[in-house]
Amino acid sequence: MMTMKTIRAWAVLPMLAIAVLSGCSKSNDDVATTDGACFADKLELSNPVVEDLPSSHSVIITYDVKNTSSEDFDIQKGHRPVYVKVSATTTSDKVYTEENLLTVSSLSAGSTTSTKLLVDYGAGNAYKSYSIDQKICK
Image (tube, rainbow, N blue to C red; front, side, top):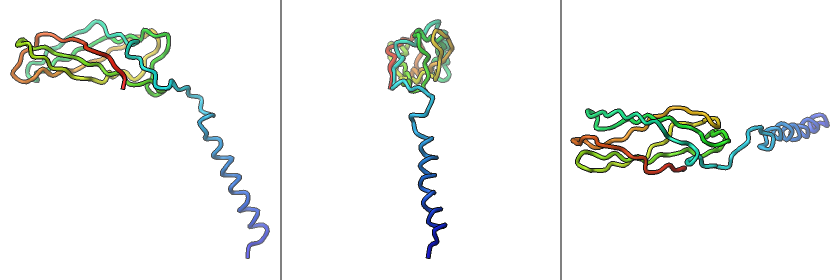
């Protein structure tokens, strides 16, 4: 048989659990979300430096990435990752296209950083040129 003291202890436990869990609600978080905003048109790629790697039939293209927006870009705060579609053309005019994740996860408004993209142009081919075909968010 349960005593009155035991009943009171069991009655307090659910209220204590509610009080603790209510402090964990999303409405109390200080982090503002951006609702999946896409920065593909706000991250500008410039000053490319191309390094041809014939032994691995690929090129590494190093870019400056500038956030031209007045807002900070930050994937952890809800911005969508940016992908870059890059094509490499060979001396025999074959075109190889790849979609690379832009490896910038955060960038303050107006700031610039550097990143690299890798494009394979197929075994037995020689590199001629590259192009940025598209920047998209996924």
